[in-house]
Image (tube, rainbow, N blue to C red; front, side, top):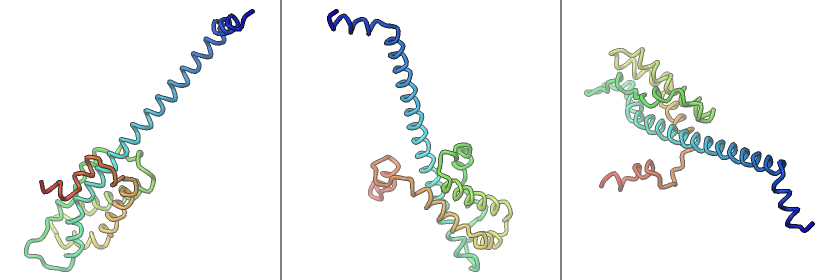
Length: 170
């Protein structure tokens, strides 16, 4: 029997057909899992950047409240409005996409900020005292640091382009 006939017999056998189907199934499963991981990674990047931006937007007010604890200001900050947590509230179910250290720092910052927000009422000095006593500025720094560890500031993404001063001025 010539070699071409032997090859044709092998290719026509049930075992070969089953092997091809198995191989196709494995490729499909591995491909879908890779796609799942890629989408999950992209969601984590987006969440990280969003939380970082939201926390960064609170920095000036938290710093001012921290500095003005004992100062009497002619135009006091309204401590009721320092907390911006729309991203945190909207994406709290996706915090599991972040690393353990990121989740810990972010949750610690927001839970402290939320508790301060609840107890301050209209008393500005209470707010300043709580910001200082509960180390809110340190917790803000820690949350920013943990998130920043996993954000690629060197890539030319739209997020990073927005941070460039020359782009903002235009």
